[in-house]
Image 1: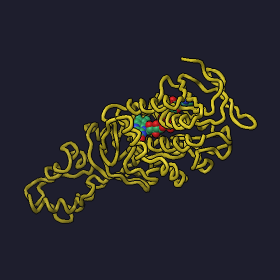
Image 2 (image 1 turned 30 degrees about the horizontal axis):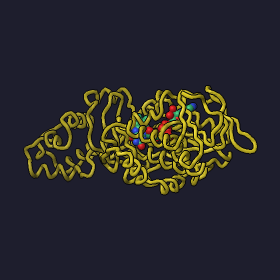
Image 3 (image 1 turned 90 degrees about the vertical axis):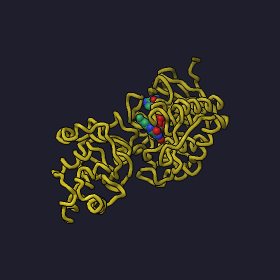
Image 4 (image 1 turned 180 degrees about the vertical axis):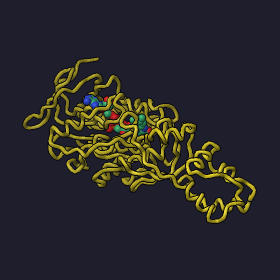
Length: 398
Ligand code: FDA
C-alpha cells in the first residue's frame, strides 16, 4: 500500500455503502477523493446483508418507507437518485438479481458482487481507499477546509464527508464516531435506538414457548402507528422474523405489541364455516389447517382452551374462542439491542443539514450521508437505497 496522501479535495470517513458510493460520484467529477476506514476491510455490512445476498434496493421505494423526525428531508435525495438508478448500475456491472418478495431486490449470487461494483466504480473514479486507519482528531481550518489527524498521518481536505453509519453490530466496525464529529461542530443528535431488531421475552414466556424456536407463521404485527403483515419467527430469546423486525422500529420500552395470528381472515367466521362443513372435527384439528400442530397446541394452551368437536360449540363460545386465538397481545421484555439490530433509529438531526447536498448548516464543507443521519428505512432494501441516494446527492456537490 502506498503512503497516505497528505491532501485531498474530498476526504470521506467510512468505506461502507454510502462512503464508497459518494467517493465514486465525487471522483468522476474530477475531485481527488480519499476514503478512510478503521476496519480491516471495506463494506463489511454490505457483505453480511440480506443473509449474504444483499437486498440492495426496493422496487417500491418512497419517502413513506423512512422514519425521521423530519420526514420531508429524505424526499429530495430519493427523488434525484432512485431505485431505478441503482438497478441500472447493477445491470451495467452484469450482476444477476431477483425480486424475493414485496419489491425486495437481492443478488442471485453473493453480496460481494455489490462491494465489487462499488470498488470498480471507485477505481474508475480514481478514488483512493485506506483501511485500518484510525481517525484521531478533526481540526477545522481558516478560511475553509479541515486537517484530519489519523493513525497513518495528517490529511488536509476541502470537503469532509462523514459516512460512519449507525451503531448496530459493533463487531462489524460500527461506532458512534459520526455523532461525536457532529457534536464537535454543534449539531444536535436525535436520540438513537436499535431498530429492525428481534424482541426478547421474559423467562416465563420463554418457558411457555420452549418447543417453538424455529417455527414461523404469517401475522400482522402492530405497535403504535406501525402495522406489518409478514412472517413472525419464534426464537430461543423471544420473537423475530420480518414482521417483528419491522414493528420493532415503532416499539419503545413497556409498549404492548399486538399480533393478528390469522391475518386477512375473520377467525370467527372461518370457525363457524368449519363447524357447518365438518361438525365432527375437533377444534385443534380444524386449526391445524391454519397453523402447525405445535402452534395450535401452544395457542390453545396459552389461552387455557380445551378442544372438542366443533358441533359442541355454541355461536357465542365459538366467537370467544376465535377472539382469544386470533389476537395475541404481549409486552416484550426488550430487544436484542445493537448486537443484532440491522439499523439505528435517530442520528444527526436533519433540520441542520441541507437536503439538497447533505452539507452541514453549522460547518461549511462538512457533510453527513447514510445511516449516521436521522433517516432510517423499513426492512427490505430501503436502508441501502438511502445510503446510495444520500451519497449521490453529496457526491455531486462536494
Ligand atoms: P455502513 O455501516 O455501511 O458503513 C460505515 C463505515 O464506517 C464502516 O465501514 C465502518 O467500519 C466505518 N466506521 C465506523 N466508525 C468509524 C470510525 N470511527 N473511523 C473510521 N471508520 C469508521 N439494509 C438494506 O437495505 N438491505 C439489507 O439487506 C440489509 N441487511 C442488513 C443486515 C445486517 C446484519 C445489518 C447489520 C444491516 C443490514 N442493512 C440492510 C442495513 C445497511 O447495512 C445499512 O443501513 C447501511 O450499510 C448503511 O450504510 P452506511 O454507509 O451509512 O454505513
